[in-house]
Length: 338
Ligand SMILES: [Zn+2]
Image (spheres, protein in one colour):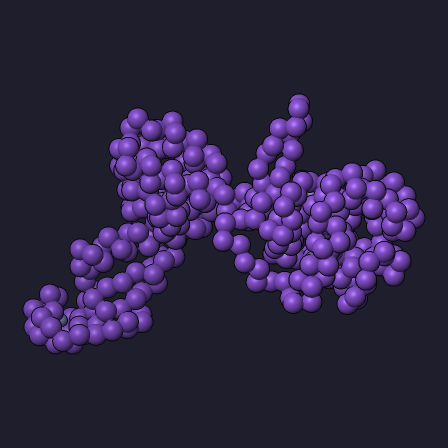
């Protein structure tokens, strides 16, 4: 028995005024055939050596038993269910509606009733998959107030976007986990904050920045910085493709949060024109790195796609790298720019 606190007042056990202790006791109980240990709270009367449960304690002790059972059985606790509901900012009743369960189901799960395994699996999926939650939400639209639907949709979309961005970040890092050699990475670990900043900075300084040109300007910036300071800016790894350098995981990188582009139609082809994100200001790039990028902007910023491809084709780094091979930073010494 552990005393949490004590207070002088009328004791409902002996009906006298004295110091009543609030105590915590480890209880053992069998619930659904399983032996469960849990912490229960009581009032303790030293006159009668008796324990008393207030209404509130009865409720909390019951919940503590159920939560200990849930933990032991690998089910979500009432608190975890409540937290995931808070994450989506949804009321108990509406959460039940969205899941198409009975109106009071979630309320019960957050209190005394232990959820079954199938419902537990659904709750876990909702928690880890905001896209699925959005689909369930749309299906329940007619049963929710327009105001509530709008608010839930906004919140879930935000969570989905964060989730998507984290997924992209993880997948890029998974690809880059294979690259360790300094000659391949330019001596720095991949820094996606800097990657996003360089793209934005280029988009800000270069009037028309399409995909091909962006990729080349990234490479020129990184290798020039390596030539000047012994390390690349971003840690990007570049492969040699027919049109020149292309960063590994390029397709994921351009979808990262903070990278913005307009899609433009050129005849039958869709092009990407990169634009700076609203209110962009750089904060991760150093002055030296900005100097390097400025040099690249001044030298190459006005070239069109074909001209910059031609420029790349004249570089030793390109000429001496096999098709689809990784372009090594050791070619920095032979770069046409200083
Ligand atoms: Zn008493």
